[in-house]
Length: 151
Image 1 (tube, rainbow, N blue to C red):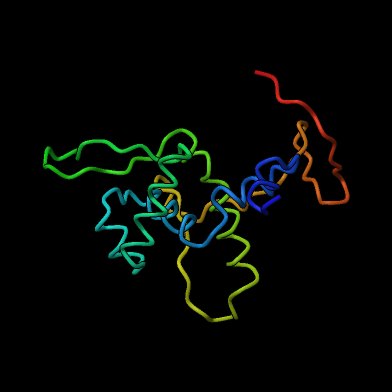
Image 2 (cartoon, rainbow, N blue to C red):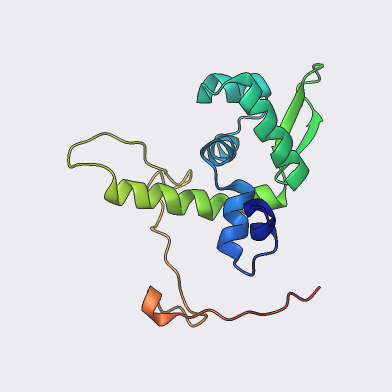
């Protein structure tokens, strides 16, 4: 069985997520969409990705349901890629990766972008995994089990 087919049938949500959106360009496209980038040429210009790769990635993200294509909001003949509920739900994934990178991949004094709350103009709170009661959980505080998804 091919690797892609194995992951498509995996009981591991992490494996399925990585198969769906876990490559560099897919996540960077989603990140740009959170900054209100909507048009093909804007994605291409900001990311510097080859047009053929961008076209394949956007097509896949539309097929997956992360984006939908809509007529341009300015009434022009262009089409826009707009995040769906599924796409917007990837926001904590991107923020977690950003915060991990800020913490571990920059040296003291090295410049990097910071995500700010629009209202307070302050850096967003670090994402933490919490129990339903609000307690911060670490890996040793959790375990996995297989469950069947109900409708």
